[in-house]
Length: 108
Length: 386
Image 1 (tube, rainbow over the protein chains, first blue to last red):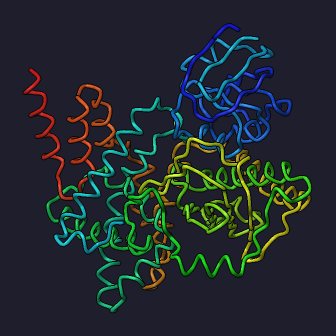
Image 2 (cartoon, rainbow over the protein chains, first blue to last red):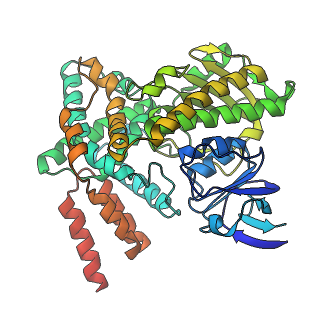
Image 3 (tube, rainbow over the protein chains, first blue to last red):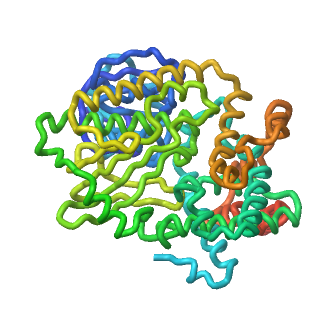
């Protein structure tokens, strides 16, 4: 498996699924399929419906105390934060593995 | 466990506060930033710029009035309701007073304020052992006696129930962020972990003050208070002074027992009830998001600044005063371009060593230290470098 991104391991667990890249963080009406992996610059209040249905979260910014990290640990879903460029590198529909234990994103 | 008695010299407690807070702020500042809403609309620092002077001035007057009226420290502490709610006022200290006199009164306020937080944490002011001990041992015993805590793994649909409970906690937290921005603790107190013999560790999550009048959308919110008693067989949960929790583990799936109370009534731990509860919160959150999306910087900033004054409401009502900010504050938000001093300082921290950053941060948060003294320190550090 090819490593395509590294970041900070913020919430443990591994998941394989398609990604949904959120380019406009303040858009409220973006829909995702349950369990999809959301990729955002950072989690804003407008990401609410996305996060509640996400299988994992990947962010460009933020650390282990960021909202994305805290929420992911509460929900028990994998989360990798502070990748710096996830929203630029990942594309909608791309299938990846998120390794929340080690902060690594693999291409499938 | 720290107690106020340890700090026989009144200044020592402020020293300890500055040291602990500076360490915490530095640790957090090292993380890649940019995730604190309402950025990029405005930085919370800009709200601090408008709120620090009138809030500390109000607190000074209130503490004096309480003293004159013979209120005990416990009675004053109880008016803050929860320790982390009070602790979050610390961010206002990042902006400095403008005169020596203001600095003196702010220092007196900080002493009293720390005493209140210490009382509300049962002597564990800085959560030095990683616990936010809001409840005493006796209170936990009493509450556990009267609350029927359900073991989740024995329930049908246990995984679904855990998922719904996690989502409800996240939704309420999210709602608090909409109400109080980065100061989530103005509407929620997480506390514990408390050891519960034979069961594990109890983490309490209390959401309160969920209908502040400065947000219209709160009128439709169905509850005022929601309380979760959650037990985990093991956890590495740690609290900091501000009441934030740190854990390396996932919480939701590790839940072993739970009790939920809404507006003082227990709710059944059943999927259909939990789903309905979550749905009601989601509806208000979505309405709130629609509203917030259309708001200007000045409108959002006004709500943010009002939330600091809202924290003082019970204190002000004790002496028949209105909780609302003075008109001068509203005028300044409308007309003035915020220019927070501490933001300018924080931006320069990358030029200094770890130890230098710590010294700068400690002086920045210290109510006894003036702008000039912080500048002097920085000038001295710069001269040494050149």
